[in-house]
Figure 1 (cartoon, rainbow, N blue to C red):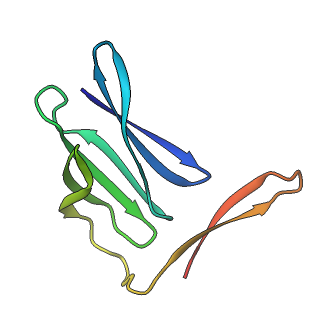
Figure 2 (figure 1 turned 180 degrees about the vertical axis):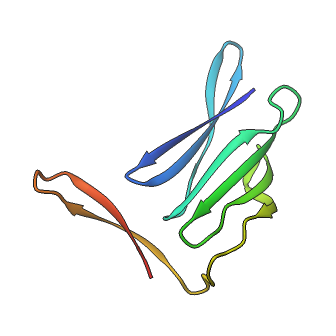
Length: 112
């Protein structure tokens, strides 16, 4: 059985994959998303397969559904995608932080 969890470091997404065996979970891998891109994973069939559905979207990429093997989730085969609303060639996304009045770091994105 494989379990995936999403964590955020500021606003950068990280997906962790764990395997349950012999009564305990062990971390298999950790994948960090790109700035402004948010991938998520779910099992195709947790009981009979190690295949994963990968859904990702971002400021410069429309929502995309892909199929990947748990052994190599970063090598996903794109199956379907929503239409792009604009031509994103040459567009970049950067993440910065600003300090609020009380000193809290507030993350923001610059898409240019």
